[in-house]
Image (cartoon, rainbow, N blue to C red; front, side, top):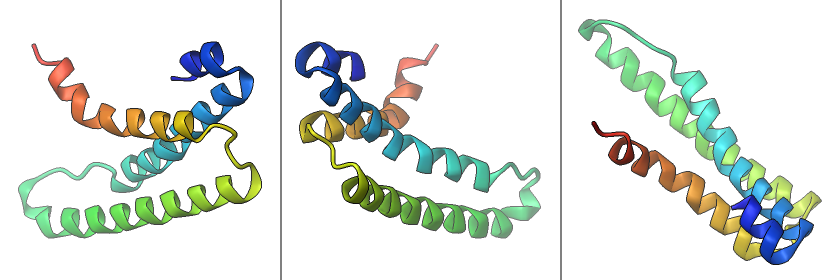
Amino acid sequence: MALLGLVAGGQEAALSAVTGGLVCLLPNLYFVWRLGVLGGGRQARRFVSRFYRAEAGKLGLTVALFALVFASVPPSNLAFFFGAYVAVHFMHWLAPWLLRG
């Protein structure tokens, strides 16, 4: 998406695409880091509790990053910003389908 933005709209569009991708990627990395790995079936309640806390942190971080980006460095091209955000978000759904085999 950033390469497409660079070709179609210049450096500002590419920067908007990178920023939009990071706004989606960073909270997801936080979620994975916070969730961690628990083994065994006897720890289901603990896993669910960790899952909800990690998801709440992810949501809060997403809101904070959106606010930070729009307050400090407003994206010059909103189409590439939100396009990259959606593209990164859809990769979670498409990756298992694409990697089947």
